Image (cartoon, rainbow, N blue to C red):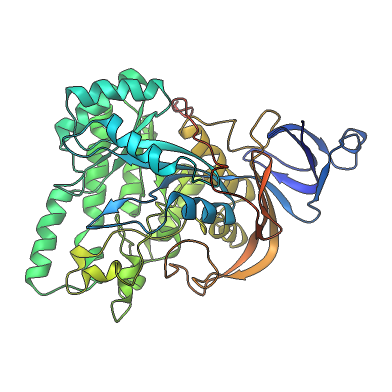
Length: 467
């Protein structure tokens, strides 16, 4: 049985266009668009009509950096694939790409299979995987080729976290050389973890144990140094590079310089770096622990450089790095020792709304909002135009967005499985009203109508964003 829905009267916004148009959805895909109140649009017929008058009709958000159920620091991220993808849907995100983890001494396949088992049958929206490569050896390199062939086309390495995820320069170079051959994209956590560990040890020896010292030891210069080194290693290997969660003005400068040289180097930032700062890390009574993540929050003056990078396209993507840990019982593991605070913030539900607020505030345009939150992430990780746009043939991942609704962000009302909000009390203009995932209503006029298991695994092609 064919199912048809027509969305009437909204302002359709994509990365390239804004048009008052009606959208016809058939069997989970966008079937057609036609300018509103024209004979072509009037001819659309469907069992279901959604009135989007006065609203935006936008592609579902694509969040390419989440960590559901990630084991870290003796505990695990508090969102499961079920709770995390439901919260994502509430926030207008219809696709996530999460990170499967290779453990040292084990193969990539083993890690990928474990993450498939966590996600399968549990997700409210569609999902894919990147692969964290923690142990570069000949077997790992061969497995990278196989994973690219089957749609896991991006691999994350860490210059941070010695003894856990860390790779040295030689291991990084080998993985980059392999990705240059097989078409994979290396994603880099660029911080000099070896040097940071020295500064952590010295700070603790001085009795500097509060959360704010997490930000002070993870220096912006050590993010910039690692970013520079990653860029040059990628250049030697002839491979593209995607630097995750860029937080420091100095790191943006390294990316801009490389891009001016014509290198295929890309940068992602996150809402926490655009809206929060070291002021939050310094909150008294251990409240600052709520804001411990890596790369860390920076002094407020870095924000202007990040916004500028997003406008000039030296930064291309805003993802969340959603990795929630409850304040009670998880963040509290680091009382008396900031280095034991689990690193990560909740945010998968807030990203689309925070970026709409950036439109309201004049930081970015409406089309740029959709570009950095939907279209470019889909292109960067091989999912476009299936995901990230509203066009005939695309998956009908569509959000009806009320640009005038006002909301106050709070843990009381959010749907993430975490006991605090990083944006508690923040007033925002704009709110998700209805969300379709492959044509199926997941949020219907601010009610959850989705189900665990609707979301399907999405294999990806290689990066579609190269020069």
